[in-house]
Amino acid sequence: MAITQSSETSHSMERHILLWTSIGHFSNHVGNYLTPALLIYLQTDILLTQTERGILGSIPMIMLVFLSPAIGYIGDNRPVWRKHLIWIGMILIGFFGFLMSLANSFTDLAIATIILGVALSSYHPLAFNFLNTMPNKDRNMGVNAVSGNMGSAITPVIAMVFAVLFNWRIAFILFSIYQLIAGFLFGFIFPNSPELHESLNNYTKNEQINEIKFTNQQVLILSLLLVFISAARAPVFRSLSYFTTVVFSDAFLFSNIEASLFSGVVLGIGAFATFIIGVLNNRKALRGATRNQRIQFRAKTIFISNTVAAFLLFLLILTPTHESPLLLAEYVTLTFFFFLGAAILPTILAEITGTSHGMAAAFGLLFSGATLTGAIAPTIFGYLADEIGFNASFLFLSIVAIVCWLLILLFMIIFRKITSQQRNN
Image (cartoon, rainbow, N blue to C red; front, side, top):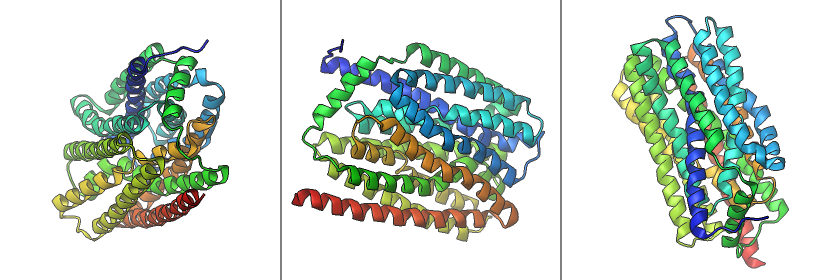
């Protein structure tokens, strides 16, 4: 029997779900960025080239390419499994940390990151599905994105403290203990009633009942473009966030402690940028903007984000290495503007596809498309740094950013054509 809930109860449960999906996202990013945060410290026991560092960043992403669509498909067809897949993934991240603490070679590290890839794949397609079936999905996706980025930002700083006070192996163990606790709490507390999510889903549908639906062909075209844009953004996003600590240490010539602290600051600024755009998106919705107006606003935002990012990547290439303060300022600005677009693509996809069956699979495809290129990028970035220098690595990212810019422009042109057709009909 369906459960009838008041608007107040729905909002209370919405906040509860947002809290725990955000904790899950925070934990996911902690697991994802713990290895890059500790790379400059584990060199005391395991010497790695930049290429090998990049490969360690690529392995878990390759696993996500294949697993994310499958996880999304399971989430669509077995809704009650969504919660359990997420908390089991969090537990596996803890297991990964223990394996890393025992590693004595690059091969050991690579095997552990395979486990990490399996663990990370369970979160994004399923969590986006939860968030999309709630009334304030713009705000919720923004808050959720911030929680993940805060995990990325806090990890280098705390990892540095643990590595300095103890060693890098103890740091992995301590983070693993956190993951185990968070995973079990998520499993026990997160609400997972199908009737509950259906009621929230219906509440969202009632708010959008007057919107003109896109045709199946339009949904397909726009969704594929979003997948391509996501795939083009991912190499920049993954390389910048994954290699931040290494870049500050090896390219900008900061000490290990300075590199960790600056990484936390820079990635924290990225999280703040994500929060800002999440608030602006939500205000746009609350002020009665139509779905098409909201999509246009987001497309313009990500267009500006990519334009500034491409420009600043070229500046990094031209700035001499000894100008460390200037390089840091450029990197901070680059991160802020690029992260403005971090939570936008899922919200645009949600607007286009609606809340229909298949949402988890759609988010899985979006995430998998980004992961495919994001998986390759760290290895290319590291290889170029080894063979030519970090300037070549930044040139690679700037070229990718220009390709992404062109795809966003194409999306805006096609979307404007579709909305013009809707008005004429």
